[in-house]
Structures are given as structure tokens and as C-alpha cells.
Amino acid sequence: DDKESFRRISARYHCEDCLQDYNMIYKKPKETGFCDKCGGKLVQRRDDTPEYILKRQRKFHQKTRKVFQDKNHEYKILEINSNRPIEEIHKDIVSFIG
Image 1 (cartoon, rainbow, N blue to C red):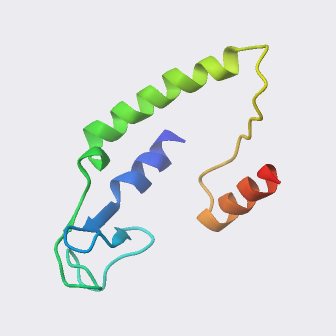
Image 2 (image 1 turned 90 degrees about the vertical axis):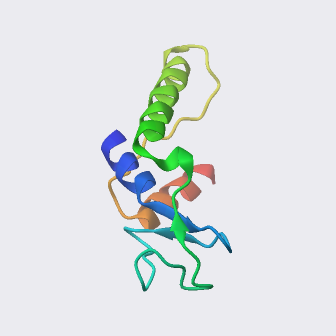
Image 3 (image 1 turned 90 degrees about the horizontal axis):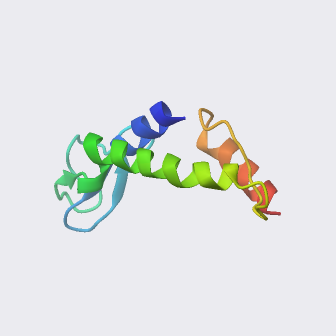
């Protein structure tokens, strides 16, 4: 779902020094704006900002629409509800891959 993916992606940050990843929803730093590992400043990737996220979502929908419209495809397609905990989503994907 676009709203949930937007929320999750826009919450991603990393340390500009050691590149440690953070997510302001799931993996927050102890001190806002600073890395727990080295104390460096936390920053967002340029493509995790709202305008880039929306652009990426549009591109995703344009490309995947073609897959669903292709009646002769040989793709395995899994549709999952991504508004659940990440652990549940991961289990569904691993189970589907087999």
C-alpha cells in the first residue's frame, strides 16, 4: 500500500560517518539525530525524501502494471498485505519462495 510504504521509507535514516541504518518507526536512535554507534549525524538519503518516494512509487506502478496485464507471463506473483508487522511479511515471502 502506497501510504504505508511512504511512511516506512520516509522514516529511514543513516549515519553520515559509519553508515549505520536507522528507522524512526522501528529502529530509533537513543538520541534523536545522532548515531548510537559513533555519535555521527543521522541523515536521510536523497531518494528517501517525499518527492523522490512519490516518483519511485509512480515508476513502480507503471512497471508492475505491465506484468499483471501480460496474460502469457510466467511470473510467480505474491500479493501480500504490507500493513502488518515486518516479521509476518518476511515469513510470507520466505514461504512463497519455498
